[in-house]
Length: 333
Image (cartoon, helix red, strand yellow):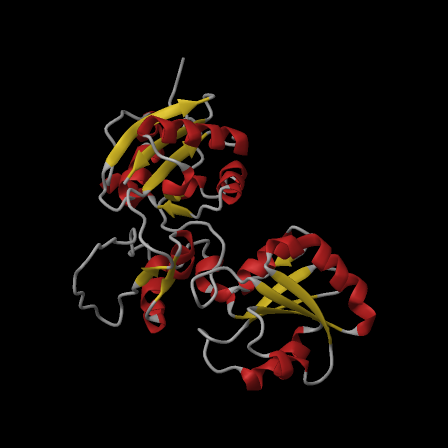
């Protein structure tokens, strides 16, 4: 018996909003310039970190620790990785902190690479770096509320949308709404228009020029689908609608698929952000193609619903197609 591939994996457990993607710095981008601050006796470990994750950043440098090293280089890097006890990093950087949107992020990691602990700037690079250190065996100890609840804060949504937060003070209210499952998808508004917003509305602005004809790839899969299967499915869908990779704004999926390694690897290969939408958001934009997941687990089909919900015009360009009985994809705009 044949079933829709985004319906066959019945591992959902309730409704949530959120997603997965790299963490932005204060400009809505990932931390790009990193400094590892280490004592002389820990230089071998510092070099190991450079070899392990250095290719993920524009630059990664090693600074030998002395009492004023943070003060001397404050503002030169997006993130400091302190290869030291957390107390040392806290005492030396606390007097330098001024504004979370401008201050560099700080992560501490022990010599054995057991723990990676973001101290400041979790949503502005520290969580991202801790996640990268996890690839070397460190356990990322994140305490920011959205990460603790496994939700996608508005800063992460900004990164996936290739945007940045304009009014940073608003994120306290909107991230609380994320935690309560009340924020919903990012509303997209094209101008010219004048917009009046309150203090509890977070405004995101695209980093580059608005692309004409941009599309969203809505995607679902069976568990364990490979990155090459996602890429092949997305390529086929783009061919169907006469679009190229540069026309893709981002990838959208459901929260029950946000941790699929193959999906995340494929998106990273094409330098695409990933937005994951909760069950309630997808139900509001359910697609036209019947889906067995509605019958089996109460979720609408992920591919079409996420493509429609995340698209600028909430319009479906391509109904879902299946590849390898493993990945489904729909195209929205």
